[in-house]
Length: 313
Image 1 (spheres, one colour):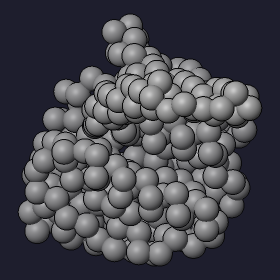
Image 2: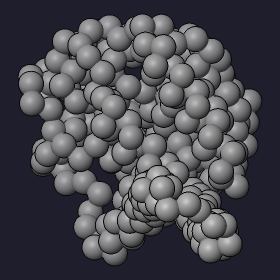
Image 3: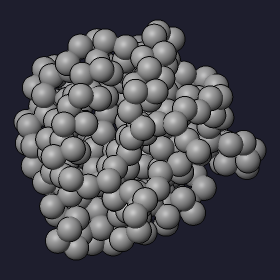
Image 4: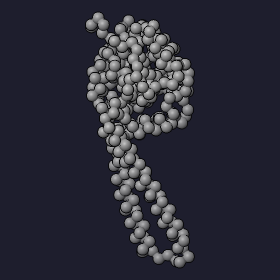
């Protein structure tokens, strides 16, 4: 091992985390100091609107093991993870959020698995504290549905909290997607992977940075990035609608209805028409989601813009 070689790079995305960043730093430092290995902590400030950047800069100036990337604006959590990986030098890279829901102490188990020869070590949440029943149910449903409609195995009940080897990081850099689902991309890459179980804690402070709107976009990015089955579903439903409509037409021509039932029959046909029109618009919406992402990819804009750096040579 070279004298100045960094063994572990810890990537920590930040967005309005001024109330927790100091505690996060102390926990990460305590864990990594206990390993007796060389390391650096890369904070990625994703356009925070509070005092996060200033606190992170202060930490950088006091500790040479800490570095900071600040985006020119908010580009999103997945872009922040990607930037951290792009600027990392460690032989192993660990991604962990700043909210301390994923306990930094679990990183020791990840490093142990990595030393056993695994290239990817992901955290598996066996329990999620402080989350609503709705979020737990929708998360469970999403991960299992995604596995059903994709051709690759994406571990369920996992997040971006994971360790990846340098060769996995280098391979990930070759993937140019803009609407990124990093944990899915890592699964797609292959390599030798395993998981470590842990209990996800409540947020140390503050509120979640993933409200329902962002969760919906995240889910759509995951589905459109790794499955074409929704597009095939549009074809199947369209075919079924055509056959069903033909059957209704034939039935209407064959069956003789009394004059008094004309209004009821008309309302029935209108209802059926509205129902199937609704389905068609849903299918057009699905197709539109794929088209929007195609447009994003063809623009060729950078995934993020770094406005400021601290601690980098």
